[in-house]
Image (cartoon, rainbow, N blue to C red; front, side):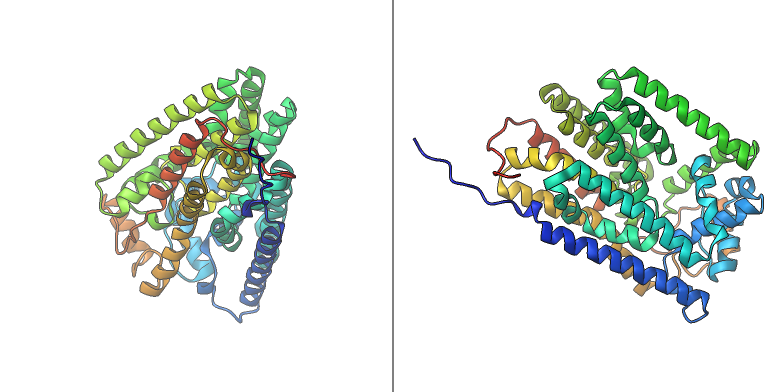
Length: 430
């Protein structure tokens, strides 16, 4: 009988690499805060900074001025306010749900550098703590596989850390049978509901009716509270904004190179909008069917939570590079199961696909910055508005992207691997 040889701890569990990545993120956060501080002193042009958090900051100012409903209705109001702050035009349709709009409004009460540091620093720290609690030994795997997305999120000051932290909190709560915390975490995902679809489907599959009904009810309470604080007209304005944002996405007015969906990838290579959307829906349906097969074959709750988190990134056509921070949550949950079932070559392929998915948007933005000095081309706000209202399909420049195709391949390959029986034990101490 052949004795099993002791296995080395896999690279995915390297604490050294995790520490290096955490240091990189901390240094980048400090660097961006310093850059915002230099801008406030008049020593730096805002062209060097990301527009994402500045859009949040501008929205906060509009909330304090009582103009948020008009901002939902009219994207050009936010675009003009952004231009007044930054000095350059940018098409900025605001389609975040009202609860997040109210949540982010505090930023305008602080200097932009301090607001950025507090928002990204607090949500980033919460993300890392919850990811460590969720992943344990496999915590480094989540950071290694998604480093480019984490860098983008730290640089832009977007919602990636916050959403990933809420998903991690939900998974922890469900793993420990803490139904109330699971309900609260799922309800708070109203800020990005399309990234919680997989989790909602899993709760439905597991027949956790109290969690599902409680989360829906609490989300409605949060929505009602935000409407009281922001004004009753905000709901109708938000619905109109969501409709117009969908139309802008359909016509290619969003930066497709930063998006991680099949729709965005096919569209960026010149695909027809209707056919691109049809292909995206078809492949999303395939992913859903594969996921149900995985859930029927595998009863491990961590595996089910990981696959539910993973497919949430491939169902919606509206997924940005910073949203892929959520992939880290799926990785720490699924890494041990993939390790037990996949070959070394397959694991490296998954790693490569993760980096293509998360790095492409960053590289595209850098290239775009070299090729063009304005994210929407050399157009004034009035020229942009004329083109949009005429029903034109934009593009002074749309860079092709493979991010969405790579992400779909990653999801599909992972689900296929999870259908297999266990082939090897985990290394000792992992």
